[in-house]
Image (tube, rainbow, N blue to C red; front, side):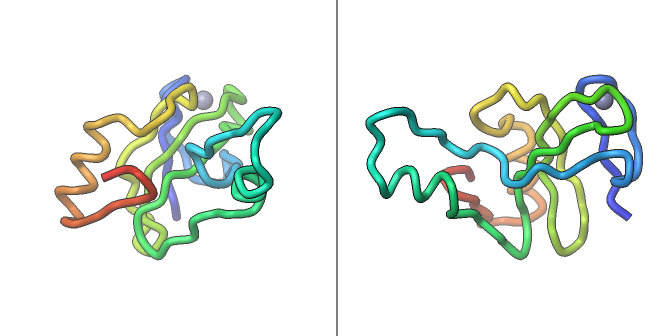
Length: 109
Ligand SMILES: [Zn+2]
């Protein structure tokens, strides 16, 4: 069972209390974007076997969105952090690198 901690209200609960919202840190494109940029934003997603950054919502709690870094194979959670960030916190990336040397995900290492 996946256990997450909501960084907004501090509650630690099983995943049934949360709702997954897909990949985190997608770059949105505005008017004037190319068709390739828009296609990438709408359809291109990472689906790694390993460390992944995801959006989650505390659906049966405070209702707020947040981000989580977790391993899709072991369900190890490396950390959760507020959704109002453009990239994962350095301490979470360091924790992942320590556990998984050579790890990278999109532009993050
Ligand atoms: Zn919460």
